[in-house]
Every structure is written in C-alpha cells, then in structure tokens.
Image (cartoon, rainbow, N blue to C red):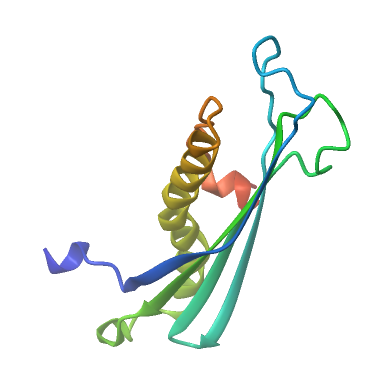
Length: 142
C-alpha cells in the first residue's frame, strides 16, 4: 500500500473569492443559458516543500455588458499542498510535474461544486461544469 501513497499532501482549501451577478434583463424562461468558462491556475511556492495553488473559474467575463449573458461568476479557490519529507529521493523535476498537474486535478472537483452551489442558491438552473482534461487546461499536451 505504501507504494500507492503520493508524496503530495493536500492540507486544505478555501474559497478566496466569489463574485456573482445575475442579469435582470436575461429571460431565464425562454432563453438557453450558454457559458464558456475560462480557467486560470497559479502556483506560488512558500518554500520547496509547500505550495499554494489558486484555481479560478470565470464565466461570462464581460460582466453582463451583453444582455445575452445570464450571469457573471468568478470563483477562486486556493489550495495548500505540501511534500511529505519521507519521499526526498523523488527527483525535483518529477515533484514539480506532479505538483503542477495533481494539485489542479485535486482542486477542480471543489471548484465544480462551488459553481453548482452558487448557481443553485441563486434560484436558477444549477450550472454543472463538466469534468475537464487537466493536461489541456495546463497546456501540457504536446
């Protein structure tokens, strides 16, 4: 079982930012809600064994300047990750590759849930983001 344990430790996450504006001119009864979410990822190293990861989802970035947008939503999660010291033999470049990919993969379901919850409590049809290809999001496909 030990060989299955990752050196990456997920310590915690918080919603750092949540902005939601509904478009009062949008006809929710007769129009289809269309969204094209954009994502932003930022890794900030506190030291070589601890990293903060910000994952942001921005929906309808023009902030309702277009009446065809049902709402504006911006959510930013910040996750805290550390590296377990007992895995010190892992090459540093491998550690950074795992951190860049796996931290986002770990945080994304929390982001999806937050988007669904915010749209649900707004009393509109809940928006459920589909699972995404993290490699493509991070531009890792070659």
